Length: 448
Image (cartoon, rainbow, N blue to C red; front, side):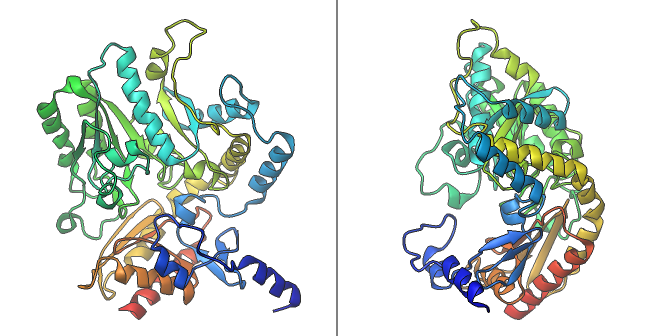
């Protein structure tokens, strides 16, 4: 290591880990042996000592165009030098309108209006508020009930954890929103084990919405929110016909259907949005993550025309929706979003993901038969690998695999419980797909 490299290394290694409280992390264990990242480029992260780590997770499902792509970096730099911030209330800047138009053009027909925020959590809370307000302005204020799904992840706002169904995200935070119910999750290992793409079994689970309607009455239900693929809970693709059936039941009872596409949006499943893959038109789509390839925080909600227009009936000088964020449509985020959408289009990354999906599935399924691998699920460029839990605690085996993969195999994976989740940048090469799963296989074997 040269003197300059030694100085860079020293500067990038913190000498005090106490002050930072890491999210969704066992802080005490982490700080005993931290996994530090100093820089990134394209398909790789780099540790402070310069070790290249292949990114098998697109950061947190978000760097779909790869890391530190020059067009995105330059767009952010130009924007920072030109306009650092513009107020989002009663004022706006040109790029916010341009980006909204570009996003709406990618969405299904008649979803033509975009409300910007800063994260997937904010996007979900925004969509839920719009749903409640929509029924209110139409004179159906009794529709206040929100329906989520078991094992669903919709961010960490109080709305998101209320409709979400991951127990650890809910149990410490009191009663949450009232009037929330949940559909059953769609996973059954006995019926769906080692599924490629959408499982054959499970469409009938959507009919549980009929039971919930019978229990509460349709006049009390505002919206249903689901992920087309439940990602953070361990990669649960929607069964064939499931989303179509949900749409039919929602139409039957006048209930809004919200697709949470924070993970599935912008190419993860081979299309701009999963709604296109499944041929199902929701009433709202939440997005974040891939809109800027993770470079600047941004999220939003795409809203069906009829919902938007229902708010536009009062006096023109009056605010239609009392909701928003200081950093809605932040100039740097809009610049990053426009450059990211350009990259997706120019490099055909959505189509690329669709083309690579069979190869990705084959590579993932090659892990079948390894010690303690009990299930594998793939859809788009996503894979979930379930490991058998140890008697001494759920998650211990997966944690050891993740740590060994990072330190010894130079590949990043993420975990939830004893599930390994993989979701690489869409620029991944065919050889890198093989490399990811070869390295994961070695880590699984080594941990045992």
